[in-house]
Every structure is written in structure tokens, then in C-alpha cells.
Amino acid sequence: MISVHNLKKEFGKNKVLKGIDFELEEGERVVILGPSGSGKSTFLRCINRMEEPTSGKISFNGTEITDKNIGKMRQEIGMVFQHFNLINNLTVMENLILAPVILKIMDQPAAEKRARELLKHIDLSNKENAYPASLSGGQKQRVAIIRAMMLSPKILLFDEPTSALDPESIGDVLSLIRELANNGMTIMIVTHEMNFAKEIATRIVFIDQGKIIEEGKPSEFFAHPKTPRVKEFLDKVL
Amino acid sequence: MNDFFQKLGELFTTPAYVESLWHGFLLTMQISFFAIIIGLIIGTIVALIDTAKPNKWLIVPKFISRVYTTVIRGTPMALQLFIMFFAIFAIRGFPQIITAILAFGLNSGAYTAEVIRSGIQSVDKGQTEAGLALGLSQYTIFKRIVAPQAIKNIIPALGNEIITVIKETAIVSMVGMYDLNQAAKDIGSGQNMSSYLVPMFVAALFYLAVVYFITFIIKRIEKGLRKSDLRS
Ligand SMILES: Nc1ncnc2c1ncn2[C@@H]1O[C@H](COP(=O)(O)OP(=O)(O)OP(=O)(O)O)[C@@H](O)[C@H]1O
Ligand SMILES: [Mg+2]
Image (cartoon, rainbow over all chains, first blue to last red):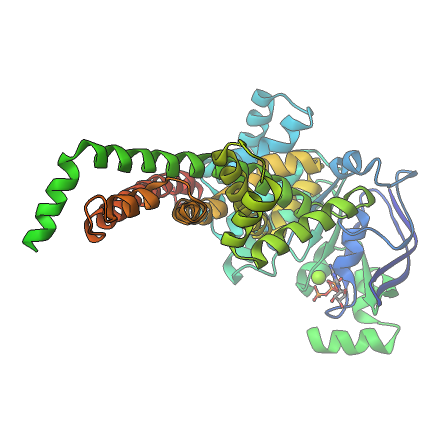
């Protein structure tokens, strides 16, 4: 579905991504691991063009993603952020229906109906008219996830979705992501939750200093890391 | 003290004095009102240019707005007023009030631009990113997400700027215009009451009343805008 060819990204003189080649198939769940500052977020953000690549090519289902088609592409490629980024001046319901209504994917009643179903599903029906400021972190992130789902994306990108949460809410958010995974959602996720990574991933990708230095099935990756760098990393985090 | 109240009584019972004060007050309000409107228009345009993503069409506008704010903020208001009166609009018969409005409007525009610019920039970048990730256009994001949040940051500072303009217009008396400040001076002069304290005290009350009124309005607006911060 996603095909990345020789992706490079520089911030001024800082070469952050140094040539990434990557393929993502439908139904895959790729967990991206790597040390802090290795370029995991930047990689994810290049895919939906939150960062403009310095060079290289990224395609979605065979179509190159460019500035011209990025609006449409972002409807297919949803993103969930570490800090939730619910729109502060809109209620939960308004957050959910804003994009589908403005982009004319659904009319307002249909969008509201869908939003209510999803809210019910995550047990937050009573927060429909609440503003984000009144939600807990875990509630915000679950709303952010269903907000992305409102557009029925083909792929969801998660950048450390639980890193800003208290331990109690982490479980709720992970359950929701797990459920999406079980329903066949194609997922790319950066996370430091190693157990969750093992459980959910169909493939692990390890990035170090702007390059993918190792990838493989989680069973292989965790049990028999091939490179010393990954061994060292796993020793520290496991 | 007795004298003070006696003079106060004299001021308010002499129709000519009351009329002078009232005319002065009206001129002050007219200059302030239109200057603030012009300042808002200029300030909004300059702030939008300043905060827009750089591209080749904006190089010149961005440069001009930078020069404009730097020059206005870096020179005394009184000097700007003199330049407008004695250099740029030194045309016989050109209405003084328009010159004054333009001088204060241009001045206020630079400060208003700063207020609006910092209001826009204080909106968390994550808010824009959320909009982008949902496939919304820059225009929609600005209109539905950034602007409503920026306004909350802008209103209080804008209130200060409005108050500043009203008080600063008092320097038009330096170019011979008959504003509230000048009226007080005139009433207090030798051929009239020959005492400055009382008319100036009354002028101060006029300024205070207006400032108080504006502060009140701004507080009300702020309260109305805060609803999304409250836990509901
Ligand atoms: N907008 C930006 N401007 C300049 N430099 C940036 C920007 N975003 C990221 N960087 C730099 O790129 C490098 C990689 O950052 P990135 O956020 O992709 O790392 P990461 O692997 O996600 O790290 P972490 O685990 O800490 O989130 C860092 O050196 C960072 O300082
Ligand atoms: Mg990161």
C-alpha cells in the first residue's frame, strides 16, 4: 500500500533520514523501534507529508504522494499524535464531524450518527458535548483515534500514542488500537511499549541514525537480533 | 479644598466650558475610534502576512511589513504625528482630523499587528497538525481552528492597545487640535478660569470613564470566549 523509496530528510544541516526504503502491505502492522532522535517520528511524518521529504519518493497504492494530492491522501492515511491534538475550541462531537462534513464525505446527520456509534463504542457517549479540556489524557487519545477513524482511512499512523498518558489510561488506548488491529486495520506505530509491540506487530522495523538497520517478524527480532546495535537496544529496554 | 469645589461648580455651570469639554471629548473619541479601526485593518493584514508560510510572492510584502513595524515601533509617536502634519500632509486646508486619524491609525497598526501575530503564533502547532492530518485545507484550518483560538489570546492585549490609543491621542494638542486634553488646558488658561487643576481633573475623569468602560467590555468578551476552557 505504501512504498517508500530512498527517502531522505534534512533539517538544515541535520541529516535525519538518510535513505529509507520501505514497503507496507495491506493488513500489516509495523512497529517502528529505535533510539530517541533516530528519526522515527520524522519517518512517520514524511509519509503523510507533515514533513516535506528532502528527496525520495513515497507512493500510496501506486500513486506518488505529492503536494497536489496530499489532501486526498491524508483522508486515506490517518494519523494519531502523542499529544492527541484534539481541537480545543471544538466539542468532542465537533472534533469528530469537522473533517468528514467539510470534506463532504458524509452529511452532518450521517456524520453525527457515526460519531455517536463510535463514542458509544469507547464508552464516552456522555462526553459528546464536552470540550477537550475536560477530558483525561486517555479519553482524549481515544477520541483522537475515533476521530481518525471517522474518515475510514486505509492506514493509521501512530506516533507514540501512549507516551503522554498515565499508566492507567495506557491500557485503554492500547485496547482500542488492538481492536483496530484485530479488525484488519493496516497500522504503522512508533511505541516504547515493548510487550504491546511484540503482541501486535506483524513486522518490527528498527531505525538508527536515520536508516532502517534491521527488520523482521517480532518473534525473530526479539529472540535473535542480528545486529549488535539492536541487541544493545533490546538489552536496555526489555 | 473649598476653592476646588467652587471651581468645579463654576466649570459645570458655565455652558461655554461644558461645551468646550464636550467638543474636546468628541474629537478625542473620533480620532481614537477611526484610528483603532484603521489600526485593526492594517494590523490584521500585516499579521497575516507575517505569519503566512514563506513563499516567493510574500518576500516583498513580508519585508515591507517588517520595515513598517520596526520603524513605527522604533520612533516616538509625537514625531510620527509631526511628520504627518508638517511634512506629508502639510497641505493647506487638508482636514486636520484626517491627518490625525491616519497618524494614529498607522501607529496603532504596527502594535495591533504584533498583538495579532503573537496571538496566532501562541496557538499550539499541534492544532494545525491535527487539521492537516485530517485532510483539511490551510484556509479551513485557519478559519475553524487557529483563528478562534487566537482571538482568545488577542482580545485582552487588543483591549490594552485600544486604551493606549485613546490616551495617546492627547498629544494632538501639540499640533493645535482641540481635543479633550486641549479643552482642559484652554478652560484653565488665564482668560478663562485661570486655574488648571479643576478642568484637568475633569478631563482625567473623562479619560478614566472611557478606559473603564472599554475594560469592562473586554472583560465581558473574554468571559464569553472562555467557554471551551471550562470543564463541562
Ligand atoms: N521540525 C524540526 N526541525 C528541526 N529539527 C527537527 C525537527 N523535527 C525533528 N528534528 C530533528 O530530527 C531528529 C530526529 O527527530 P525525530 O523526532 O524524528 O526522532 P524520534 O526517533 O522520533 O525520537 P523520539 O524517540 O525522541 O521521539 C532529531 O535530531 C530532531 O532534533
Ligand atoms: Mg518521536
